[in-house]
Length: 425
Image (cartoon, rainbow, N blue to C red):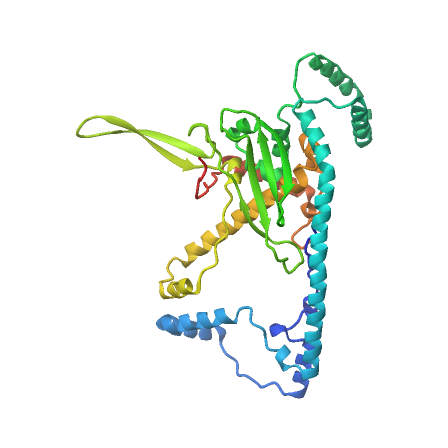
């Protein structure tokens, strides 16, 4: 799916004037009318006087804030001031654009159908890959030769410099072949740990569970969206053979013409015991009865950071009814700042949750072997190299490496906040 076009920051002298009024209109008005003169006002005195008046009159301050709030997002009225013929042309352009957006919607739907058709062609290759990873089958001699040729083409210069080291490695490989190793152990765990946004959610306890992960695959839903399927071998942690998560898009396309993320559905993990549940911490302490002198053990379960919280996604806020809005207006606004922080935290969690799903779908599954070997770690995606201005930055690599080292140190010692809920069993 195409990404929205990023606008480059242009010359501020060419920017439109406030209220979306073209500079030409303003200049013509300035030429026709004389600018009224205004006496000089001491800014500090004016601000001080205004602040005192507002502080002494809370009702006036509240009224001004409410009025300003209603002006946000309002049109300037410039279109209404245009001549009737010009307004008709503007309406005509809106009609033309709506037709273009309908074609864009058809394009996105056909593109999704094309992705589904080609995904059917990918599935036999993914199944072949799965059999080799789990030891159900072995690659053919032709496949091995083709893979070695690709490796030699990629690392031709490195091979020439490290030929002696490679010979030693080949001897070690021959000795290891005598051991009975099934498939490729810890294939998906290693690939996930190399995928940066996902690896940041994996703890040491998660790694023990993910050692039993034998496949990750994806399916398209009948409605716009996709499902991620994690297949596990029999393990001592939970009874599920599969853990699934579905991402749903809205029926209507967004303004940019792309599908808009709506919500995600996870699954319930049937943990075999509280001790095996890696999404919670268990705190036990003994309590003694003062009267009977008997002691009992109290358990406190607290949610903790874990990759498996991925299967219990955050829920988007529901739209409020008009009656609820009126009741909230009557209530005090003491907790407004806390509500805003909660909303920002929820928005960040929703964005991260969607990002993780897209990373697994678009990067991990199609290029699993490159993430396992680590070749994909150094591969540059366009968005990875853009700076704040949306331009490619090729000079600040060393500084970014130093910053990343500092950040890693902070992450290791810093304490992460726990998620607010733990719905897994």
